[in-house]
Length: 385
Image (cartoon, rainbow, N blue to C red; front, side, top):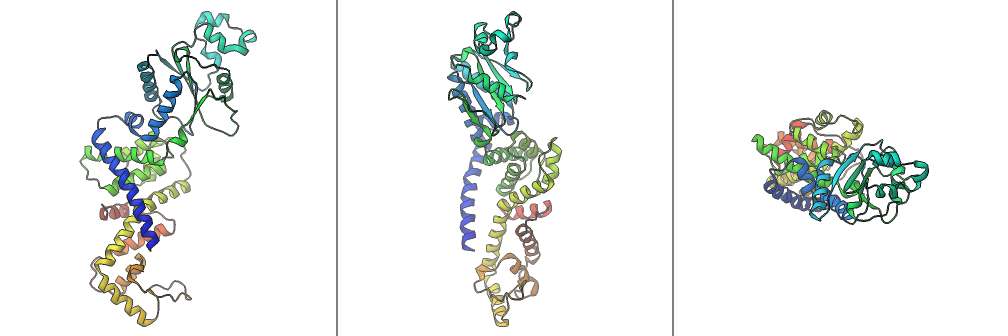
């Protein structure tokens, strides 16, 4: 039991820090849209944007790795262009669709008429510069169908001034990716942005919506909703925002996820395991704190009950006939044993016996990799902070 308590204290300290950050963000950023909140406030998103801006400011092309579409791409691009403008560079952005090829960078009809792949194909970059096809433009190539063609193009691109043309290739990393030159900046969004970024982001949104609707919200309730979004939404900030906007503590989280997600986000079994993970991280500490509180409140009655079990020479719960271990210290009594003591009448005068039954059932479900229903989740959260 001591190891469990140490782990809970460490987790509690961590969450106290992060939810203090939630409270600060709630106060300062209440009027921002979700996309502004994500790119202007959340640590992982800020770090991603900074790496991109720093590379582009040096004229270097960027390969942006991500396991899914970059959230609120237009907001990020606008922020990049504002940054470059403040640094003294002109910037007009253009998002190229997945089917685009480097030849599609030739925009001017006169240049198109002069371009001959057999003559310029090996030096397309030079042709584009000669005819000013890239001047003062930022090209974002959105998850191209042929990533290798674009990476080959960038390998032969000589970085110059940002006014000469800038590139961001958004793609998913695979082992088959060719080796890139040191002049190309790689930014791995899926590594920089983690579940804690999603949790903090979702917690702020959950708080804002609850305040707008006049619903009371506890720290534990916010923590639970934020952790659900971080686990279930697979690192996708836009899905997390939509999920958090629809979810309340009385609804089924997986059903809510299906309502906001129009693509396959995982198997039913996989989502159930993620839900279990979120519940274990947030609800198990509540169960443990309540167990300790009940022991402290009814210590004398529980010690008397333990003495009766000792006199009988049998354990409180004997699931295995060969298990003859006897509880010696009252601190070692778990929730199921508390429930047994209350039900068997060994500790008369414990008015919370009905609550203990629910607590024991919830504890048993989590310990066997099962999830807790929304009604009991709401009950547990009502007992927390």
